Image 1 (cartoon, rainbow, N blue to C red):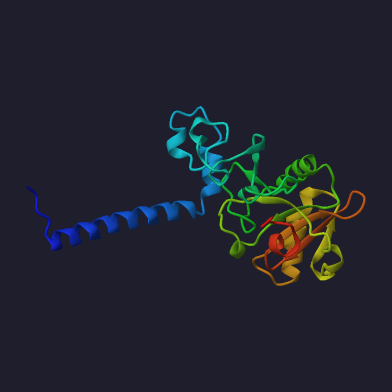
Image 2 (cartoon, rainbow, N blue to C red; image 1 turned 180 degrees about the vertical axis):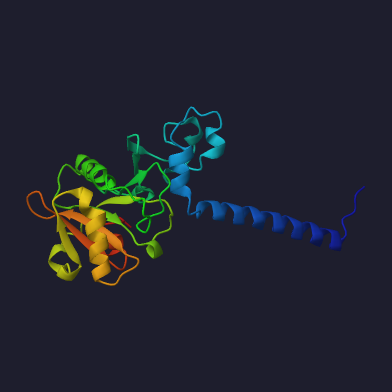
Length: 231
């Protein structure tokens, strides 16, 4: 008959606690990874890959390994091109019908607003995808947050709606205008330089006719100017 002495029980308990704590730590680290979006574009798009379920941290909703997972643990792809994907943001999970928050992500590894390789074409892709989802342009907004206000190190453009009261509160000093969305990065960089900002966020919205408003912000344009969450 086995006899468990108090010291043995204590040692066993401490070992279990250590292992459990380690597992929780690993899961937390995984959940808070700054490379989640990079993992999606590199390992989560081809559901037929032989090692798909082991490499993809947030599998596509139509994949077999997505079964039993919650909304925030899966990827819903809205559109795909050779260079970009458009997906549902996890902030949509649990929200009522009509709330919208999507992400446009380049397939190439590009860090963010500070990356010299940021593609001009991402704004047009994002705008077309946004209008397709909303059916209108007046309240549609595209946003890239500054490096210090983001939790992912893969460039992503937020597809969101403007707050209904925000246009009359916009600071004219922070705004520029473009005819072509391919000019957004260039114009935003010039505006940021004039404002002495090394790190900045960008918001794009329709202004009038064919013109677009480009707002440069030191803080997060997503949180300051848009309906970024339903909670």
